Each structure stands twice: as C-alpha cells, then as structure tokens.
Image (cartoon, rainbow, N blue to C red; front, side, top):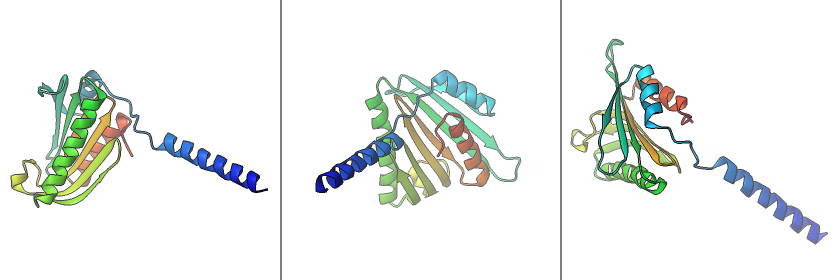
Length: 172
C-alpha cells in the first residue's frame, strides 16, 4: 500500500511539473522587422528604420493623438539581434536600468518581470532620460528580438499599446 501511495504521489508531482513547464514557457514567437513595420503603419504609427550598435535591425514607431483633449503618445522600439542570448541580455539590461532609476529615486511606480515580459508604470523624474513624465513601459523578448515600449499612462495610450502587443501575440 505504501508503494502505491508513493508511486501515485510521484506521478502527480511529475504531472504537475510538466503542466507548469508547459504554461510557464518563455517561447514567444519573434516577429520580423517587416511585420513590425507593416502592423504599426496599419495602426497609424509613424515607423522609421533606426540604428543600434548591437542590433542587426532596428525600428522606431511613434503614435500620437492630441485630438482627444489628452496628449496620448506611444513609442515602440524594435530590435533584432544576432542571437537569442544577445536579445535576452538587452531585455535584462533594460529592466536593470529601470531598477536603477527606481533606486536613484528617478522613478516612482510599480514594476514586474517574468521570463519574457516586464512592465513598469509610474512617474519618471525629468533627469531620468525618459521623455514621459508618467509612463507605462513594457519590454518583450521573443527569441532574437526585443520590443521596448513606452506610452502615456492614460487609458487611450495603454489601450493603443496593448492592442499592438496583442496583435503580435504578446498580450497578457
């Protein structure tokens, strides 16, 4: 009887481990620069190719709406790297930069991170280097690509940003 209980418990633990591994994976599918540009232009963003010394391909996309009475802005940067490890390093470095801003009291807000996505929302000091006083920040790593996104914290800004992320399969 003890052997059956131990075997059953072992099987249950194994099944739980497999289910957690399946749900907690960080294997988001990367998008191409062409997909990024096409999708964002369709969403009324202005998209420009840019340069980064470490990335193989870069784009900057900007959305702005001042017609709603609020100054809604969204900025999304796309980086394609030579390898997954370089992309992961960029993702982690960006989150570390946010943590340092918080430690230096240049950011006051909430932050969270998992294996493929981080978010930060709050107030940035003018000396932080962030162009938004209050911002919603999202970082995504998917294979060899990284998206770094900033939006105003109003509902409209977050809605535009989250709609774009959803279209790429990077939503919640």
